[in-house]
Amino acid sequence: MKPLHLIPALVGLTAIAFATAAAAQAVPVKLQYTGYLVDSPVLDARVEVARDAEGGPYRMSLSTGLVGALGDMVPFHFKAASLGKTEEVGLQPSSYHSETSIYDNRQSVALSYGPGGSVTLTDDPPTQEGQDAVAQGGLAGTIDPLSAALAIIVKVSERGSCAGKFRIFDGARRYDLSLSPAPEGLAVPRLPVAPKAQAKACDAAVSLISGFPEYAINAGMYPTTARFWLARGIVGSAPVLLRLEAESGLGKMHFDLRAVLP
Image (cartoon, rainbow, N blue to C red; front, top):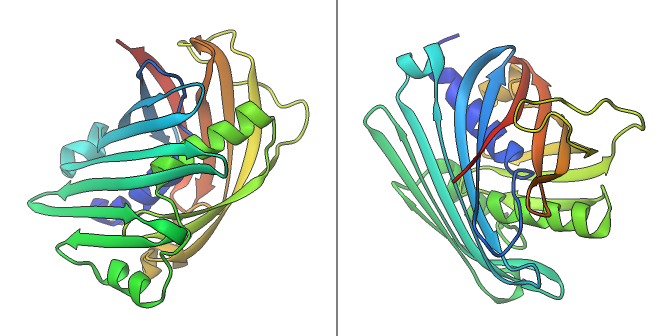
């Protein structure tokens, strides 16, 4: 398989992974993650998020790129940012913007959120996936991956519930993520950054709706299930993603918390 064919799958998995990667507190928190394919590091990701513990506005950003042998072959970088606020009905994004670069190709996406769940897409250059989603009416009622991250954190950490369904659209890919409790008695991953962390495990089922390359779906590149651990006591009182595990046609994958950045 050519290295370039891995990119859509890795981007999709990153979006899924960082739908569970946020922390939440007033002072901005910066976290670094490493993504592994089998046991080889393939992705570096950095997350920054700020949210008042009492609600109100939130902001979140993500930057990621390939590393290791794959990174040497394919110059790939992705960054995204989301703004919104906390309302009684939950988190409500106001805007989302992302930029992707592979070799000399660049793609930007902007999503604007209006009343009644309306979503407006501006992509440059326009993608077939994005335009198809607009034509099919698939944007209404969705939220961006970073806002979904914070929504999951709030639901799991503040309500203690591994349950709920999140309708997600990132400008090209449309998918649903449903939470359920993980089996009791799972061992907590022991990572150097948090060797004694106490963590809560949840399972996630992923339904791919549109925008995913057909060849990647046929090859089973995208995971349909994932398991993640949220831990407290790593940075302040906010829970953060400790590890996410998934498996696909690419092999076993996991994202691990590597460092809390200054």
